[in-house]
Image 1: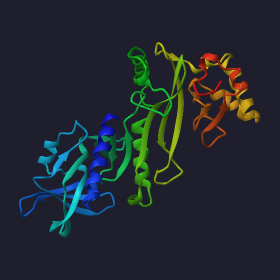
Image 2 (image 1 turned 60 degrees about the horizontal axis):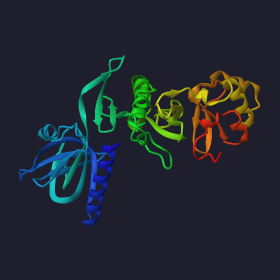
Image 3 (image 1 turned 180 degrees about the vertical axis):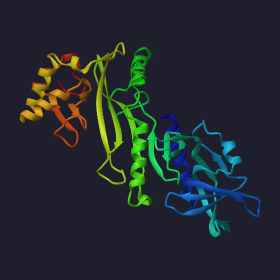
Image 4 (image 1 turned 45 degrees about the vertical axis):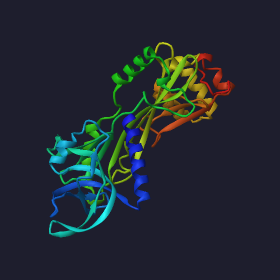
Length: 359
């Protein structure tokens, strides 16, 4: 999160400078490099709009990266080829570059930010196809052998350095409380199968009627604070995964939500069923009554699928979330949304009711 903040700040500053000088910026992947007649380095940028553009690198051009793990010197020595860059302070030059037999307009850049690079590592799928890996400061992107971006996987975020307006954060607590919470999420790990999703993405790419129109799929997992009080701190985990079938190119996503609760004085994980003053089966039946769920078949499905992590507490309401695939009769996810009225408070322990509920 700190790296992201630095990147955004740098980006904003450069954009302001560019606006003042009526310049602009370019971004894309470097596919070739060379030297001009004036002995300046240049690189050929394949922009994300599919155009080829030349970037002149002078002695005054600043090259940097917000990712401290990127070896800038090594990348400069290979002419920035196989890097993803953002060039700022760009202005046209009265000079043409030749690439693949074609003349390309050249631009001079005052700043070049290296956002990512092609890793030496690859991933081999069960059918033998090798996927390339582009490394970025916030995750990776897997590409097909022809360079098409297939799957973007952002590094998991939270619960530390995660903030929600007017909700207490983990960083507000003492270190002795934070450590057990962080350890809980470390041991739990990610809630998706990255390689399985990559296989699906590549399969969709191969089967696509028009592979050129394939759109990048995305995966992310975030943990953020959802509610708290004097005794309990609650979090919500949100996982975004590609939604197969809805779009032949996999651009749509679906969300998986789950809730966790912790003792605010020790950091110990609390089974969310223990937040209720009655057995979980009775608690769910009461909540279904409050929500007006009357279909006997649906009620039975909800009872069969009810797990502690279905319970998500917010300052103003409590959710019981059943993710896509957990209920046979539901094509999508299903959720009960309940206010903290007298009926819900009858089945919640007083110590479990969050700040902000006005109860």
